[in-house]
Length: 386
Image 1 (tube, one colour):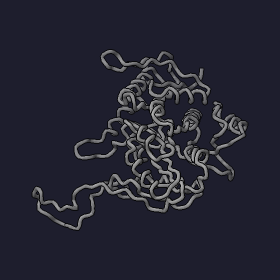
Image 2 (image 1 turned 135 degrees about the vertical axis):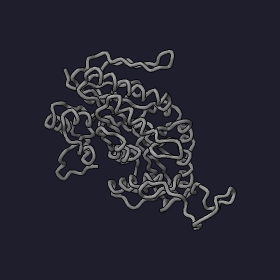
Image 3 (image 1 turned 60 degrees about the vertical axis):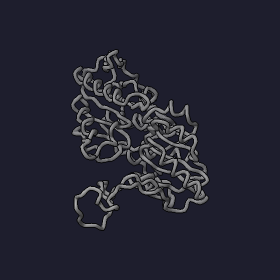
Image 4 (image 1 turned 180 degrees about the horizontal axis):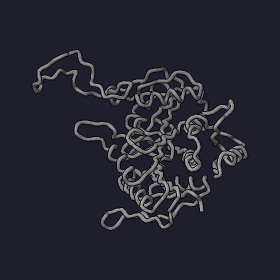
């Protein structure tokens, strides 16, 4: 009997199957369904006693996000009460992560979700490119926030012809550091920035009021200074994109209206190819249709959420498989190995399957049968890593 067990809900079966194939471990039998009264019911049909259980639960944007969360919580609780040795909840995309700030009287929904995950029985949480790194502080249990950037960078190398002629554009202030990192790893020059300014944020991410020269004023209706009114900043591009390939970098791609508007401006300024790169392609609503009708040539996202429905509306969406990263994270957690290599030393190998399998045999008792194009090296010894 394997010392660990892999189970999942109904949200993202393709990703779970890929992880199962990579780890060469079967998926445990689980029944998760919605009753006629709309209550969620789950049942784990195999013994989890004394085993390390990994629950992989994606989020299906075109289904019910709340149902997906409830499935995960009930699976946590079911495994914990069935005497599992440990329960690790793998959420490639962390729901409600964008609602992690206090706005007026709305509260902080992400705090509620994190507490529910802990109370339901999770000992550890694994996610990919959280909306903010500070979200790890919402949890009292260990959190592994994995990076998808090496896979996205490799996708740029493979799919963007003449990528050396690219200019990277940060979709917003939060994506500025990511765009800078892409430039550094691809050894490219300066990039455009602040093309989408939806919020007035300081560098530390605090909400800041607009600048106002008026120091005091009377609290009388209709007499507020005009500068105090909140206004969206107009789109602008810093940097010359004429004759270049423009790559707009973001973390979460949901509503794409502003990205499409930015692409139109970039196209008018002379860019001959426009790409959008993001980790989480939520693409809710009519986002796929807007992409299809826009000057955007291709959208590159990972499969942290399924895109089957969106791809039916647009052929411009390319999905990067992130399952090797999750599989290696699970392997290292099971064997008590350092997670550091997942953040720095990712090597893409084109014709060396033996290197990957030999490395997996030497480093652990569990062999990871990953794609022959990617491996994780603890000590690269001077090799070029992404």
